[in-house]
Length: 147
View 1 (cartoon, rainbow, N blue to C red):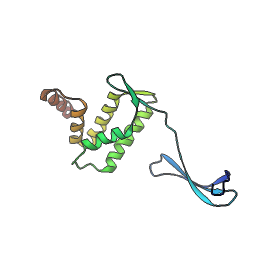
View 2 (cartoon, helix red, strand yellow):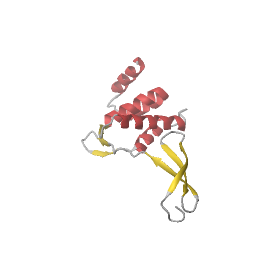
View 3 (cartoon, rainbow, N blue to C red):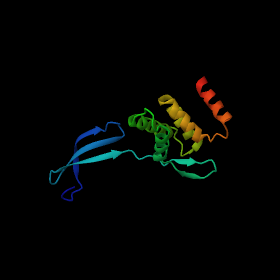
View 4 (cartoon, helix red, strand yellow):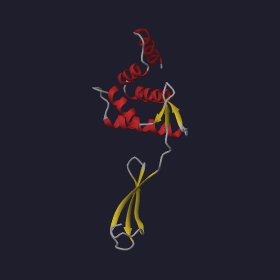
């Protein structure tokens, strides 16, 4: 790589902490200089079908921002948020579908938040479900408490 040669060999290979990327130490066959490469599996593009029928590319950062807003001023750590986001993303790709309804994503977020922090769950649900009145909100809370 340093000398322009395209030939190299792998010296060491190991996964990153979260296992999503392989780190490889390589050595150039021509000049013997060492360098690092990262190998990541390419994900199939995922489209989200919105309520109005529009389709847009799945954006994991939108999910993350919604969760962060719901968890504001709550005892939820950044690591917990990262785990929730990673789990949702993995679950979506494990569906092995090219398109997924936005409701599916919203329900996944609510299910994960309910396990992490009840108040964050209620905050997310209140925005996501767009309750029309206090009665609809109370019914949702009753359903959650009955679980």
